[in-house]
Image (tube, rainbow, N blue to C red):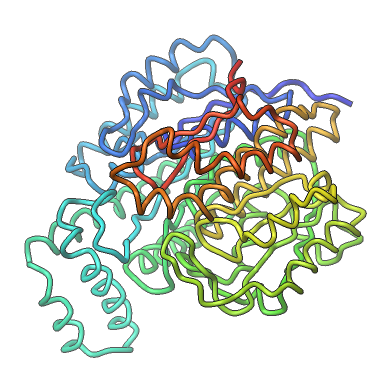
Length: 498
């Protein structure tokens, strides 16, 4: 049974591979999805804003009816996710521009029957003195501002006194803290305005994302207030707070497909460690089990309370007590061989397809698990319908659940593109395992002498192992550092757009 092709228009957060290419790669698993995205060069980057006028002109050039719009409001309002923390436009100008842009959207005849999914980030607070994605003063005062954010939350919960709060506040120059708080307040007020737009029908669904968060801070206070507004306005069926940002487009893409097909898909989570579901991962504010429920719900699928009633298994490779971190070189917990054996046996013996979320480490795969999966003596990878292990737990879960669900739906309706599935599986293994868990630290140590050839030479032995399982020719895989930094890599089989 086949379904008609869905035309989905996407306005991404920025031009990073995970925001621009990953949704495209997930979409291409399913032959019945036609995804339309603005040219990558007019979207925001690390040091430039999106060109909104060019995006609007691109939209006007589209001559087919759109079924679903997925829109990153940070792009429309500020020029991108990074720009949302940096741009100095005032609130009134942003709101005026937004009203104009949304009017153009809603009055475009190609959108007359389109469902609109919008999302906006609740501004993050980075616990570091790295200003690469923040205002310039973050290199001196970033961690102090983070400390103030947590302390202020503790103060209003009566966990510390006014004197303790003022002591932390006094370490930050008054003008810098004022500028930071004014930027937060502007973004917070605009987020609240989005709820008014939801009420008046500008969006069908509105997601607020917590980006790189912890359990206490100004962003959590804002999230709680927005959540209360959602409840008070009776908008809970159309709006929610969600942990994770970069993967949201992929989740909403699958949500639109599930809704259009009127499918009911149940996923049963299973954990590799006894305590794994109860852990709060790095950069997150909820337990892993709570995060899983949120991510499955966002896609429109459901959590099954038993294995027999599930359509798919979500195998979550978790730490036992504390998540390690490849990017920060934090290795407090060794993976138990029994944990790896549990994962392999689950894949081997399952009568259902497996979505594999590798979150024992933040910022990269577990080497022991991947080495076993790629062992030449087994074919376990053929039973895996989705894999990811990148950045935060939310990033991994959102992308891998979306990947697995779209592959399952494509197979169900006889629209599965096996070659594109092999490509995205290869990309995730090269990115999350070969690069993030292994080569990134090598490239960082030799950054001054690193170039494209150095990167390729480091990755090549890993790519050879991956290629033996995915059967993509080695010379068709391109790799580069798209933002000129080591935090992310871009991996593309050459033929992905051909």
